[in-house]
Length: 166
Image 1 (tube, rainbow, N blue to C red):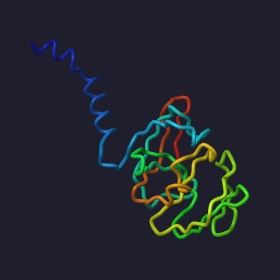
Image 2: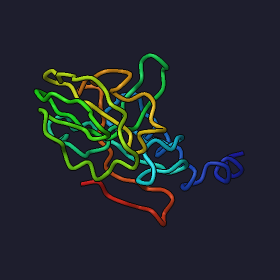
Image 3: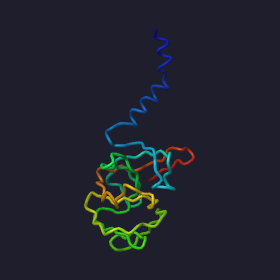
Image 4: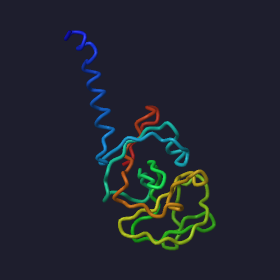
């Protein structure tokens, strides 16, 4: 009786079950996520897998974050463009921070104009890299609570595209 059970539950199976439980936890200190849309292309493509950690004080402009769109009940991945205390707007396809254009090298399409928005303490303004395809960003949701964001640290799949975001 014990021998067939050992064949079913071997060491590799135990490791895989353990990794699944750890990586799919609900404590929200870290998460793994599969990219499902093209709003962050070409940096993140559909079927890429990322690993994100809770690191509130280390988030800066250009970082990629994961947060929950409470309206739709889905996780979303976007790039941080505006930081706490800044005023952000868009004019003639450019993003303006405190009325000055920023070097928005990660944007793949021009940004539709949006009205001036003052980012409060503990908030972030996020946009997708492919602005024409981007939904669920700060243009529609408003600023995102920094406490609810996880910073993307690694793209770990597909293995040909492994990358660290440090």
